[in-house]
View 1 (tube, chains in turn orange, cyan):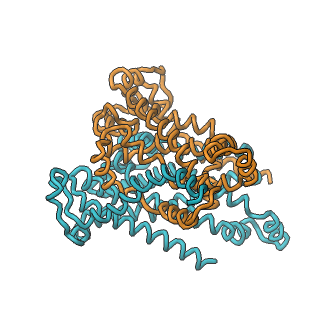
View 2 (view 1 turned 60 degrees about the vertical axis):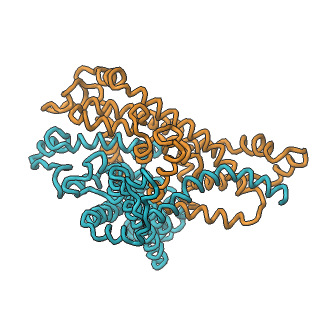
View 3 (view 1 turned 90 degrees about the vertical axis):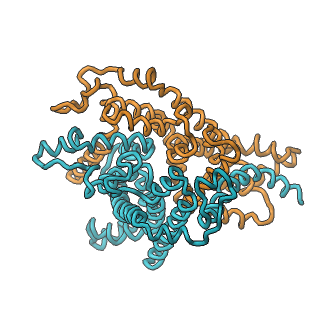
Length: 271
Length: 291
């Protein structure tokens, strides 16, 4: 038993070091002076930590703009999708109407359609709506998602019908019931959906790359990819850019991981 | 219409409008696009658009670069998928082992790469893989192994991207495997121990079969995701060397959004859709047969 425990923990620690090392090195190299990370013998930690790379990023390369773009797009998408998906999820779980099951099943088939299939026409639609190279061109297609509707519906199924009936008898309208009775109950699942949507939007690369064409509107991932062309040899600078991009979502995950993992479970057990 | 049905319609309208206009119509239009010669001239003036039936598909299938991209994508999914699932299973067994202390800590550590931004960590790996300064080759130096040009050598570029993808994604499936493991009733193991089954036979005859449905879910999700390979080669190799890491989605992106050959690119997208559909069906059938 004792020997087992040592082997298991040794393996866990080796795995943990391999997993964290790239992230550790990213942070470490971002505090180095130019050229330090490629020295021989290698520096694993900076000999004299400096913020010079971050200053270069924010002052000269104006990465603050990209930080704003990413934040604006992720926050607006998250708030919008919370309302839109929860309304639909609630309707699918608690309201009676003809064709409810058929419509929901039809929606679920969308989960196996790769989004790239629609991207070419979507671009043309955005072009005709004059939304190319705007934040809204990134935001609007993500305001509703089949996964989001599914997540909310599964939760709403467990809300007792009597509660809604009681509110109805008290004379509350459908909107009132949704907003003041159901939404407060749904807080945990809304937190899950919020963190999922925020992270997916923040990390998304392909669609923002397609729809945004001026670097003043680029999100962080698109900015990083475009910077890497001119600054391919500035390892420390690029690592600072990666830290700025990764840190917000990593911190968000560390603080809210309970909700995030809960969402993964709903998706896998019933999906 | 009954009042409840009317209210339901109002609650569903925003979500349905977004999904129909910005997802379902584009998907159907994608197929329509693939049977036209939509290109730069059609963007300028829609009257230049012509119906070309299956001409784009024929042109795609005759193109050697498409087959290269198709093979690369398949390689990534067929090699990277099982490797990722194996790493996930190993990690879940370790984290879930009875002897393990600080389970939540290790779970969080292994999951961390999943939430990181793909483009940003791909950049990190690009430098770790650097032929001269990368820490991986520096480590090879230390133990006397020859340098490998990870992303520049046609033999190693795709394996290097696979390794990166395993690192990035194994934590996701691990969480699902852990849930699967916790659903296996402890009595099964007790009964097996009474019958004298060792650790390996318990794993082989209880753990693996009981994880069957989990394997299906994890396999389908990983396969669908990996067949959509795009950002990794876009950032790390630009599809090179000699197209060895060019993926199907990347080819679609280049043809559609760089050269504006949208009809041609739509045909590539639809062929990819067919492959993803086929991969899903095959996995489900395999699973059915096993049960």
